Length: 310
Image (tube, rainbow, N blue to C red; front, side, top):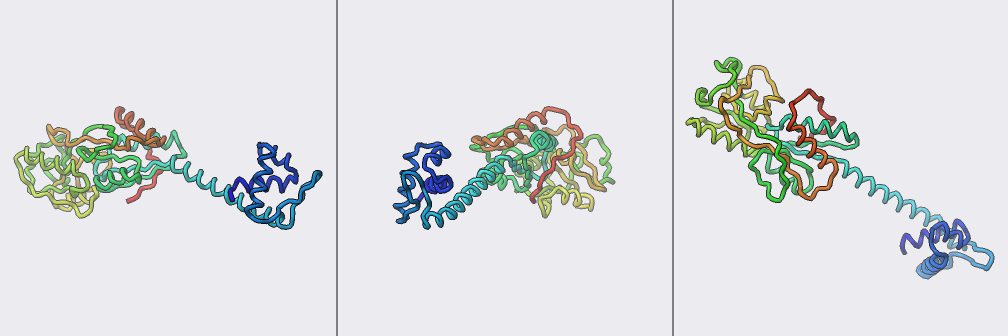
């Protein structure tokens, strides 16, 4: 038994006329007669009493009619649910990012997507770089804002700029109010940094910078991969910290100062990773917006309405 059989049967049962049922279904009358005959054969009961002048439901047909209507209503509900779910999926943008290095161009791009496409649901998720990239490959994220180098094989890479490292110093430090400071001048014994898994590219860049400066400080990783932990560690005297420059745009804490490193080369490139075969309109809109936002001066734009998943 197929839904087509039930649709033909219901049309005849409601019209009590094979020709009118065929017109309603936009098919030829013989097709209607044939499908009803097949349905009767499958059920082993007669559904209609037919004469040359009239068509009437048998008791079996009358009982069948209400149940057939119910089945068709459920089928329509199921179809609508599937279409609605598919539509919601196409109007969702899931973006992963690193806790310590989200450039200002990304919130601006998300603000543009939210303003231009109010129906798009934007979800943000932070986590370690490698896990986020695996989530992207598994189709659980649509885009990942990460630091390079990273395992990007098979993914589309959209560069959005380079980031330098900045020093985080206690407010009472002699260089806290300097316009810039040499890492060699600081010669720290301890450097607070987020765990390597959070941002391997930046962690490796810090090690390389210290080696180039001729210093060998102890790297103290925070207990959690959160910039706030590094800032609080500096404020409570655990040492200085090194963070990506975008952290200075997004965080502030009493008792600390962000100071650029003099003559520092970019520590890493920031990029948006997406799957190369994506046809998601929100994802493609985000890529265009973030590329455009990376080329303009930052402005004060309120963030979009987003759901942040830890």
